[in-house]
Structures are given as C-alpha cells and as structure tokens.
Image 1: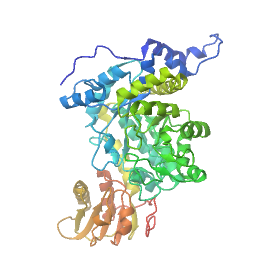
Image 2: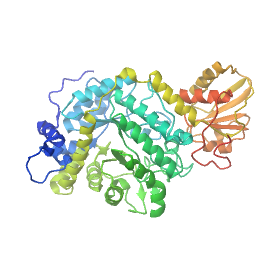
Image 3: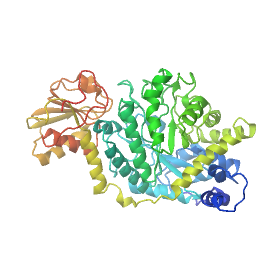
Image 4: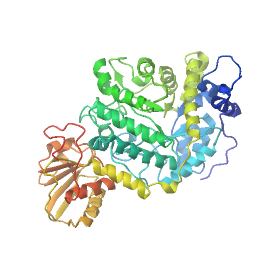
Length: 549
C-alpha cells in the first residue's frame, strides 16, 4: 500500500545548515570574532531542539522495502516500532539520524536481531535509500548495513560478493584486502549505503566461538590488525564509513552476545596484546567509527557490559587509544542486555557511545533520553558531544559522490571478487598441485546443494566430468561438525572455518573460506590441477599444518 504523502520532513533546521557552512569556512575567516571558537561538532548542534538532539543519536531499523510505499504487513511492523506506517515517517517522527537496513539468512549468527528485511536487490535498495534521503531536509541521513561478507551479508543478490573475513587472512595480502573493500565500498555507495558496520576486528580464540567464526580475519593479532586497517582504508576511500567491531574484542569468547553476556577473562596485558591490538591499527588507519561490544571485560570493568562501561569506552577507547570518531553501540535489542529501553539508552550514551543502534523499544529509548536530559541523568554536554560527532560524520559523508546502481557487480568488480576468492584457497593435506582422478562425484552436507551445482558448472571448462559415480568430493559448510563429514571422501572441502577438517580422514583437505560462486570457481581450478592453492590457514587446526603447499 502507499501511505499518504509526508506533510513535513526531518529538520536538522536551517540553523544546522548555516552552522555547517560556518564549520567549513566562517570560523577560519580572518578578522572574525576573536572569542573562543567552538569545536565544529558543537557548531553542528547549535539551534537544535532537545528532540532533534535525541533523534541524532538513534538508529533503529524499519519495516518495508520502500521509503513510502510498503505492504500491509510492513505497516503493521512500523506501527509496532513507532506508531507510523513507513520508514520515511519513522525518520520524521523521531528526528532520526538514519536507519539500518536489515535481513537475515538461516546461517547468519546475527539473524535473531533482524526480524524483517529491507533489501532484495541493488536497484530496490537504491530506490529505498533515495526515498529516505528525500524524507530529510539538510544533511543526508546515515544509512547503515552489516555487509561483512560470508555469513553476515545483508545484500546478496546482484552484488559482487567477497569471501569471508577469514579468507583474506588466508590470503594475507593487505593490498588485495584494501582493493576488495574499495570495490565493496563502491557497491555500497551505489545502492545508497554510507555506513558499513564492518569489518570484524575480533581476534579469534578458537573453534568454540561460533558467533564470530569466519567473520574474523584470523587468530593472530598482527594479521587481523593489518587486514582490518586495509578494509577500513578501502571502504572509506569510497565515502563509506567503516566500523570495526566489537570493541574491546569478541574473539576470545564462547558465548553469543545475541543470547547472553560473554566474559573476557584475559588479564589486561593479554587483552591489550590480543584483543585490543587490531583496534589500535584501525584507529591508526583513520576509521570514522568503532562499534562497542556487549562483553564483560573483567580486566577493565568486571560485571559491566563494555557497551555500558565508561571505563572501557571513555577511559580506554577515548583516553588511552585516542579515538576521536563515532562510537556506536552494538544492537541494543540483543539478549546480553536486559535493562528497559529508556534506562538502557541513557546508560549507553553516558558510558561513551555516540550512536545507539537498534533499540528494543524506540519510543521508550527516545523518551528515556529526553527524560534523562531533563532530569540530569543524561548530562546535556554528553548529548551535545555525541550528537555533534554523529552530525559531523553525516556532514563528512554528505559530499560523497554515489556511483550509479548499474555499476554494481560489473565485470571489474567480479574480477576483484574472483581474485580474492582464489587467493584464499588452502590445501591443508594433500599434494600440490592437487591431483584428483576423475570423474568426480560431488556430495555435500545439508544446505550446500547450491554450491554443488556451482562447483559442477565451474569444473566443466576444465574438462572434469561430474556424475553419480567417481572419486568422491565432499563439501562441508557453516556450523558443520564431524557428523557432517563423509568418511569415504577422497577430498573434503571446507567452505567456512577449517576446524571441521581436523576430524576428516580424506587424503586431500582443502579450505576455501567462502561459499560464493567465485569461491567455487577458484576451488574448481585447484581440483582440476590448473591453479595453485597459495593460502595458509589463519587459524590453527589441531593435527594439520597451516598449508601443505
């Protein structure tokens, strides 16, 4: 259905536009007023009402694939969220700084926080984001997304899909990582997204951490740091804000913060050397955002979620690490946090977050911030600081050129994705080059049937026959265990983390670190003996070398 036209728009007021201009020029004009100058962030908040200041620090999701024309089901969803019909009306009513676009798939570890979907294709996403921009006077809104690639990929159809973060760790070529994320940034900009809540800066502690898993670049802080820095540079070269996560590090946990509060038991020296180190590299690379994690960091503030800890966010991230950009909370609708939305919003902002992502109850969070501001529980200076940082980021992104949506998934972008996939392929057991006698019989664990079809197609150009009989090649994927292996397989291929391969008996074990069509093309060339497997596992797999090649 189509909702009635908007009767008003989100106003960051004419005073904001004047202030923005002053931040660029007026405050540096020779002969100007010699009184102490306000920071640029403070100029951006001049003249804003309390309601506009509060809206500037909130980023919820909405229902609907269009800004103003949505289905009856999406209307019902938006009524539940905020008493409105459409995403555009949600922006208007709460003076929001922007929205996060969401979707989920069955093998997405973050799916529980994403009850709807806003994205189906590049063209649809561009129409939606254009509509959101039209709903806002002044600075364009922040439009965020979790486009990490691998399990957490919001827009899949019609995009040039990269392999997992771990794939880039396996390739360990920072220049390739930067080029790949520059391509990703160009595609996101083309569909109207200007904030990517990526990359994962978590250092993976072991196979027990399934919520991070292949989202991480690896287990070595130095490797993770150099690839996080490269991803930040690539994205931001295209005018898309990067957001390394989950500070101070979610990798050494075995609890999913979507379900409970993970505990980091490391002492402070170990925490700094392992978990925090990649965030230092991200800051040195100039990241514009960092996401706080819902983690009980015992060495800094025991018993307090890091996303609500002033010691973690203000004393360490701001004070010790010197980060000056926007701190955004991880989704506030996760089960690691259990406070009412209004109280939670105040605590998160006071702790040092500047942008509050996906509050469980938007009206309560909005009203809670207003009440906190008026009662003194939320110091006005803290709200002005947070809103100023967010508005400064919006101003930074406002002048970015957006490519046309027709540029998405073009031949050049596909070539970048293919190069990244090929560089990740790793032989953990077997000869190099790989020698597999044909014909082949390809099987898979549940959920990987599409990959079998892709691999079969990609083997044809190499003259490799695939049928119901022959040498068995078995594919394993996300979340698989030893029960998903095929004992008689001559070759076992891991499409996600390589840990399951440690239990495989196959004489040839290959880790691909991705399940895209490009990954299947890359492993097909290796199986045919036509391409090397140059990757090395970025995480230790008991009983296996990092590479046998």
